[in-house]
Amino acid sequence: MEASKIMAKARTHLMLRQPFFGSLALRLNLIEDESIPTMCTDGKCIKYNPDFVQMHQIDEIEGVIAHEVMHVAMCHHLRQGDRSHEKWNVATDYAINLVVVDSGLTLPESGLMDRQYEGLAAETVYARLPDEELPEEGGSWDFGSVAQATGEDGSALTESEVRAAEEEVQIAVLQAHQAAKAAGKEPAGIAGLIKEMS
Image (cartoon, rainbow, N blue to C red):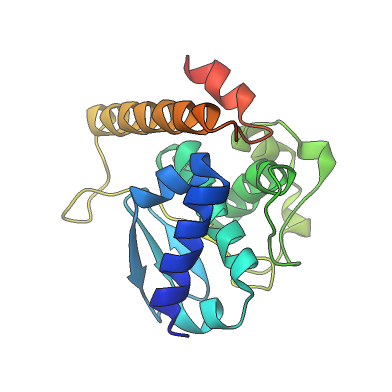
């Protein structure tokens, strides 16, 4: 099956099985991009490598889409600041992967998960990560990354643009939560995020 069809099917499955992740995923354009190793998001789209998509089971692709959605829901694309991009990606993965798995979704085996980081913000995980233990960039751990959000011309966002983007995400997350709650399919681990935003 073509990668684009697998991605569309996985997103539809998410809508039905996990409406919180599915409705947020619908806001992001799906763009095929052979220049990236796996998947990534900048808050506007999910870029995916077709080879990566085709070499995984559809339930794993659903999980990676939910992983990318969580990066956006947590505004990771807006919060990196001057931090190391590689270390920030590792910290954000630790901050979200347990939420995805605890919600009943499947991630590829290489996903970074450690209960010592459960419930912690990415900034806290980042501060606790020892540099010497970081995996190499592009290594097998990295199945879905987050890129810093930029303006249409590729420039860094201004403070007001960051605030506006954060508010937009917050509204979308609260709407997705209401949809999931109405369907009786509120994912585990999201309650803290919603409480923070309410």
